[in-house]
Image (tube, rainbow, N blue to C red; front, side):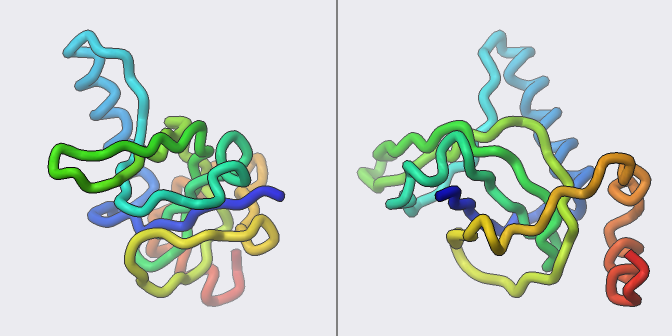
Length: 145
């Protein structure tokens, strides 16, 4: 059974902002001559890794709205320099917009069952994904999207 993770995208204003951050980081690695791997570091290590890796995604909550996802390629536990267990969520560097919905704040990450995950925006919905997030939210609240 596929399982996903849900996480707040702290400091991010929009999907475009997230994509910009990913690209900036990729270019920084390129300038340093290092191979690029996008990852997100988290303190808690998912116990259900087998249900997530290769089939699950990290769903991002941006400004209170579940907005996008990235496929999780690997989960790599490690111990940091202070002796604290952490893990890297290795992500495919492609951000997929999803049908957004409101999401209350929480700490850390949460499991998200496949049945509860929002669908990707349909093909041809690029125009919707390019709309400002605030406009998308207002149109959804009005039932127009």
